[in-house]
Image 1 (spheres, rainbow, N blue to C red):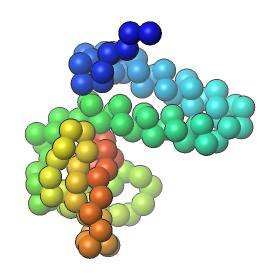
Image 2 (cartoon, helix red, strand yellow; image 1 turned 135 degrees about the vertical axis):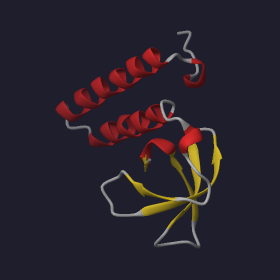
Image 3 (cartoon, one colour; image 1 turned 90 degrees about the vertical axis):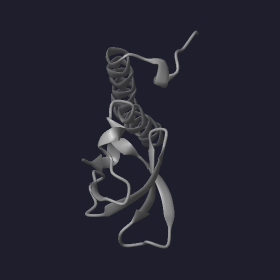
Image 4 (cartoon, rainbow, N blue to C red; image 1 turned 30 degrees about the vertical axis):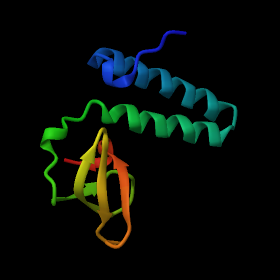
Length: 104
């Protein structure tokens, strides 16, 4: 299978990829395979990051995280589709999160 890299895909191809993973999530959920469901859910978050305009993300700015928590994340640097920085409730722990999780 000749598969394109996400960074080489057009927007419509990225949307197709998201739909493909969401279908896999639905099948896994129907079959009760929750660990497989979680894997596809994480893939969706990563793929959605390729749709984010990272020029809108300002370094040093704190953003709400769209993960169901009330956490905020301060962005120190960007690398690819990941924002690196720290959650405001744990500034000593640097981590990288997909940019699609930032509420811009």
